[in-house]
Image 1 (tube, rainbow, N blue to C red):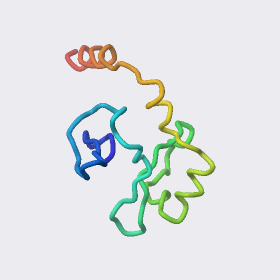
Image 2: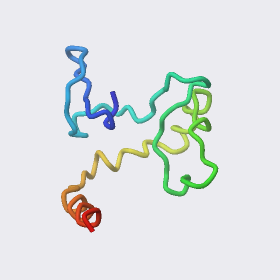
Image 3: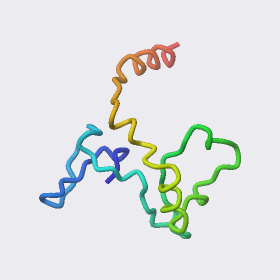
Image 4: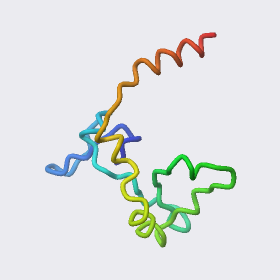
Length: 97
């Protein structure tokens, strides 16, 4: 299970446990999806986010090469965690109008 699912994998007992602490979640940010073409969920660099980007561009045939070229794009999130309360508070104010 990935961090976005809100669950962490407990390898000792082979079960998932609820939690949102990224420090306890395994690094499953290159995830093979059960869809036609074997797409792989992968983090992106901001420079890659643009019009014409489709999930099907990232698949089992190019995932290993992508990881070799880009490295662990999610490492910074785990190595330098940030607090989100301030940003969420500002977002809440904006949504309330």
